[in-house]
Length: 236
Image (cartoon, rainbow, N blue to C red; front, side, top):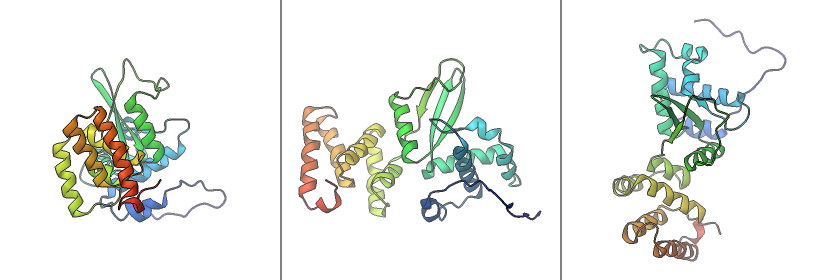
């Protein structure tokens, strides 16, 4: 093993990392390739200019520095890269958008920050102009939806075994787009409680998602939660 000669004197460039990376993610990451890929993507994104900032799967597969660090595991570096990216997406570190044109495709990875989430949401709603991205032919973008556990942890808090069981049942019962929208409504109404999200889903299932009764009921729930026993947990 060759030793590191140390950081040079004079001006040294730095890549910032959120404090939450060290307190929440680092203790949870148990795969060396996932850790290397995650840190490398932080570094790449910090060097990007303009908007939106993302890294593509093709860009990563052509990165000799990254692939060199993934050798020596008994697998091809490209395979280890793919596994690491899957783990980082499943863990909620990265957000993935798939671009398809003809029979080809590429994956674009955004960091799961506030800016990254808003960018991906704009892509999902078709509000973000991507003409600056040079891709051949007609490009169709597909956003991978976060699962219900990721939505809960991002918008409400840490999972408990009891809540996890309820989330599994809800995921089997309701469409994925309903679940995602119900969390968004809870955040917009400053009612970050699973009970509120569940009440929205139950009302949609009973009365129809876009009915006037459903819309009126959501606002009634908002006032009931603010004035009721959950008032201390709700910003208003």
